[in-house]
Amino acid sequence: MKRKYSYDVAVVGGGAAGVGAAVGAAQTGARTVLVEKNPYFGGIATHGSVLTYCGFFTQADPTEQIVGGVGQQVLTHLSKLGMYDGPRRTARTGTVIVLLDPEVTKIALDRCVTEAKVEPLLHAQVIGAEVTNGKIEAIECVDHSGRFTIEASAFVDASGEANLTALSGGDFVFGDDKGHLQSATLMIRIGGVPPEANAHPITIQEAVVKAKKAGIPNLTKELGTIVRMPGSHDVLAILADEEVNGLESTSLTSAEISARKQAWAYLESFRRFLPGFENSYLVQTGPQIGIRETRHIRGEYTLSGDDVLQAKRQEDSVARGGWPVELHPVPGEPNEWHSIKDNSYYDIPLRSLKVQGVRNLWAAGRIISCDPIAFASVRVMGTAFATGHAAGVAASVELNNGEVSVKAVQSELRRQDAII
Ligand SMILES: Cc1cc2nc3c(=O)[nH]c(=O)nc-3n(C[C@H](O)[C@H](O)[C@H](O)COP(=O)(O)OP(=O)(O)OC[C@H]3O[C@@H](n4cnc5c(N)ncnc54)[C@H](O)[C@@H]3O)c2cc1C
Image (tube, rainbow, N blue to C red; front, side):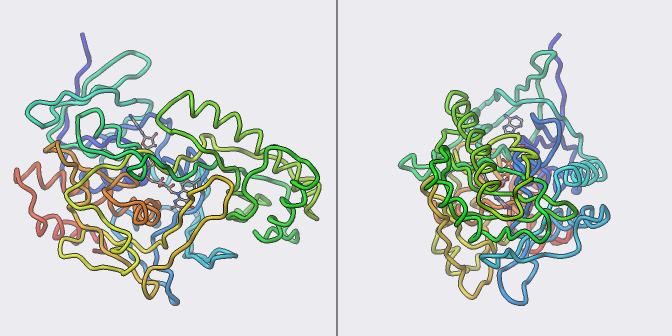
């Protein structure tokens, strides 16, 4: 007999957005399941080695924290584990970040999810949706034992690829509407770099230029973000760009294989052309290539680049964003940065989280309704915790009241210490 489970709220995807949504929903008293295909939560942080949370703070000096609620609970867990003692600024751009470690992040998120009494479901992939009269009745999942069903009253798509939106017939766009995607990047973690070795992005750039001149093949980006990892002699290099359709396994396969060649080529370049890197070694790639963009939902309001850059305030705000616009339009080319007015923050309206075409479906994280410029800011993980928190609370409010009033969502978010 087919296995069947039943909850109030089902959240698909356990990255920053999904954790925010599931914990937020559970804290309203809703019986909540968090479905994740990987063996751990964290999404691109833990499964892509993107080891910095951006978006928790504005870029002003002094900086201001703009994500609280579930996001703050995660920071508190990171702090108890000795990982977090406040934000830092990056070497080249001066942007404000929170440094991570993959194992500490995994356990911090486990604690956050279980403390809130979310039902965690790892190793389970959502592959279908049962929809009646524009409402999702259940999602279909698969594990090694076969297919099973999860019924719920409300759903949150936090899959990063808007998978549940596509499966249930909700509105979405692919890339920037013309199908153009931000480039993908395989993270490269290199160990054996002594503290005195100069790992500034400009020094790294000079070495990559020399390596290209010397004929080392398979190198793309010269100038990118380089982060020294705390408590180790490791350096994280965000350089190995690929053009890839992150929805298709054929495209992903070529990109993974090509990016791994890049990782070894960068290592060889650093060993040959960077003083202090002679004995460095490859600690880890990925595990998965970092996909910045595939689908975005079409919501009731599309957050625009102008809203972001002008730091626009909105009546139905349920989250704040403060990361600058950071575009990665062409693989191998440097990122393009644009600051938010006064290094302040912009509001994210509830309407941008509501999937059009499916009544009981909310979206969170990098798939919320936004134009390409807004996307280049809103996609970061600190902001994803905030939009996730709001989507989870909205799903629960819908459950209790049938209709979602903005005021009810805002008041519950405030009760849960969200900053809105
Ligand atoms: C190379 C790169 C560098 C970046 N650098 C930074 C940075 O330094 N700081 C920062 O804050 N942000 C950074 N970002 C952006 C950020 O990592 C993402 O936009 C962010 O992870 C979005 O969070 P999310 O929860 O929406 O999605 P994700 O982190 O992608 O999480 C989605 C989760 O859903 C799961 N999932 C998907 N489909 C299914 C399904 N059908 N069934 C079950 N589970 C499913 C996935 O396994 C995944 O765990 C970077 C992105 C990339 C690619």
